[in-house]
Image (tube, rainbow, N blue to C red; front, side):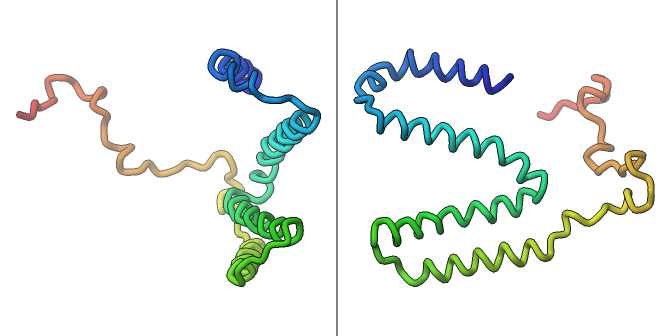
Length: 148
């Protein structure tokens, strides 16, 4: 539901703030298809990301995002026929090796101690030091000392 309201707010902002820019665009089938392709790609990205985060975690997701720059290098080489520095290849290798090492040594899939011991959801946690200090609102006013 949040996405629907976000879309409505965005449409209102475009109409109110970007009307002249929107009217100045020469709408051709190419522009419309490029915009639609971007919208589909963004929709797929925001739809797939939660599943990736749930399956492999944020660290592997961030490492995988590092490879997006490498796709830009591949497009630069094969589509634009441009040369790239040799360090791009080294960087791609390092990122690839990092992904493999992290995937092989992934500890996120190991069961926690609470689940192994059978305690599960009944696990009680120790409060941190700042949780044991009373909040100012919990202390009676006569016990507060004014600092001058």
